[in-house]
Amino acid sequence: MDDANIKKQNWDVKETELFLEILKELDMKKCLDGRKVRNNTLFKVAHRRMTAAGYHRSVDQLKFRWKLLKSAYYKCKREPDSPTPIKIQGWWRYEQTMIAIMESRHPLVGAGVKAERSDDMSKDSDGESSMLPWAQPCPDSGAHNNSTIHNLDLIIKMDPEMDSQLKIGFIGAGNMAFGITKGILSGNVLPINIKVSAPSSRNLGRFQELGIAVTHSNVEVVCSSDVVFVAVKPHLVPLVLNEISQYITERHIIVSVAAGVTLATLEELLPENSVAIRLMPNLPCVVQEGALLFARGSRAKQEDGALLCSLLHRCGLVEEGPEAWIDIHTGLSGSGVAFVYLFAEALAEGAVKMGMPSALAHSIASQTVLGAGRLLRDSGKHPAQLRSEVCTPGGTTIYGLHTLEQGGIRASTMSAVESATERARELGRRSAARSRK
Image (cartoon, rainbow, N blue to C red; front, side, top):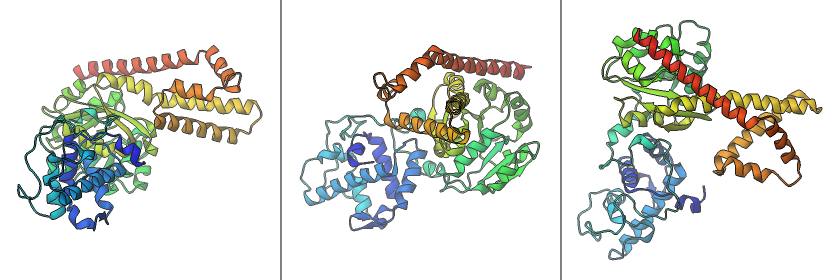
């Protein structure tokens, strides 16, 4: 990412204060060689901790932010009576911590910098050139709304690499559990910290190949885990939760990935005061390109959501939202993966019909879907805009689109998402009814 793009991303005050507290705790001073950082691992650790706190910046953006802060520090040191650095309006909120970092001591008021100063900027924004707000993938994490700086001990705990005691368990060894596991392992969680259970050995072999311990005991998984993913078929959730309930303690976070099983049902089946989160991932988590949406239960705190974001951020896009969106997400992204596969298959078969070898046609179709998806995601443009950019007057694409519209592809796709969503809701009603019996 170039500097011009980084500059446009607004940092709020609390985010910058947290960033500096993390750098101070990591002893940034020891990593400086003159004005350069000689240990890039420091920014990677800071990145993990910022992610754990609910802020989703890239490592490059953290480096650029440090560059601005460091420049402001040297400017104040050279010219102590100069006005607040223009690039970081609201500098007075950060200067004491910067002095502590750069000079490895607690600064004294009057040491060349004024500690108390009024500022025209909003207390919630430092005013750095902010043409665009920075989107937070976990908007409800609350990280940037707290009135005080985050508890660094909590943030370190939410960094899987920094807390080797965090254990993760999976009840169920199906495709969804495997996809999430692959995504988690691509981050900083070690296989030794994961355990998976299933009633049969049919699906456990692939977990063992990853160095993960397996068992047939759900209770064993719960007793040896802090975060437990319940990844079984919806109709089995009541049975599983009844089996493990007496072993669930206040330290556990129970994450259900069962389609249609509501938070109300989960909390009814779990012990009182249990922390429950409902998560809907999709299969591309296997290749770290998933789309995951979660909703917190009534007793799940913001830091529980932040912890889940930290664990899953390597799985793909992770968002938090109201539970009402979960079933819609199931129809859009969970089932939508199969819709895309059907379309890719049809693309390839069309090429085969026109004379292309099948293997080549399917390879090109998959790459076409991949390339189109990445361009759609990374460009930030509306699909209709990208579609219009491909079309030329009287060209091949507009003729093909006309044929698709004649076949009702738009209406059929919308109806498919609607049908899948309604089915997810129906499963939820059935699950709730079963739990009441």
